[in-house]
Image (tube, rainbow, N blue to C red; front, side):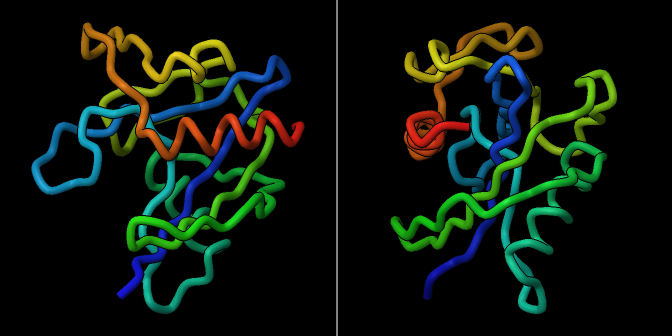
Length: 141
């Protein structure tokens, strides 16, 4: 059975992307990795409803202008990827899930890792997330 999830590519005018350092929780996919905000779809939800709900739960804000970017199917998951400009200050973000968040640029994404001041170490990107962000950058914001 395929699992459906949503992911949000949120970016600012400096072509920086909002990423989340996933919790160190047993049983989650890619603990201690940088990923995108989003999550699993509930039975009654559309992908658009899911991504909006997940963003509200995970960063405490509603994002306007979410657009479908692509749908990826691999590793037994259907990933509905959305994108939107991040038109708010990161000071307004209230992290409801994950250990940390950051804004990163293309050069950081290409390295596949990023330092977390909260975790006090460098953590890797979820490999799929690195590919999706580079795909998004190559298609043009």
